[in-house]
Length: 181
Length: 132
Image 1 (tube, rainbow over the protein chains, first blue to last red):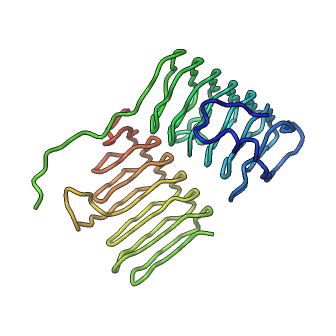
Image 2: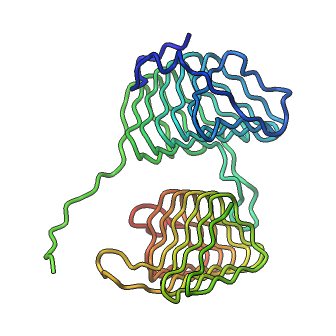
Image 3: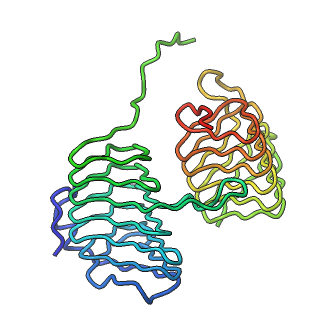
């Protein structure tokens, strides 16, 4: 049973998680026995290229993609919900705590995927504590640690640490007076 | 599959990698050109009513928008977008008309870019500014 008070839909939606997931790459090192999958298209995709994926009692909605690269460790604690379109990329380590909610199209990555120019690629682990709420389309980039109970408002691009219990928000749209022609 | 619609315009692709869900659309007689060894990642859309030109070895991440539409300040204006070789565009960035990025520029994730930037700059923010 997945019990997440932050999930905006009825708790029933979590009980009715009858979907399946797609696999790419390596099945060894993937522990998803307790995870539940939402129905809908495309099915959640778990892509392991020689890393490790450990999911507790997690709900993955349609369109979620988890990618663990060689040597990467991706772990998600119990009762966490990943809503539709969430993408997690672990080249070193991405850790997500318990009872978190990641909204639509949230992106978490611990790597830049490419180096700048001829320099090597930069990877730094990402840690997200328990009871963290992350709004739609937020991006959590390499090296970030988010403390327990923090709130990341929708659309934030997080590049630095967020202390426990605090809230971060993106710049809002500003009013600009305009003469309509 | 990528969705490539030249319409009455033209699309010139070198030896490029297009990921699933990429959309290349021309309107009127617009032209889209992408040089060799460039990659355009998932669901990125490139739209040209005049010209969008990417050099060789460019990397465009997923969910980006590259268009030659100049924005609401210049309605119905389309200004060419030129990305020189080895430009790297981070995910969910938006590049608007009248942009020229010099060789090796890096656009941070989620930025909105418009204007001329010299080779080797790193851009971030909305609107994007040079950060290094």
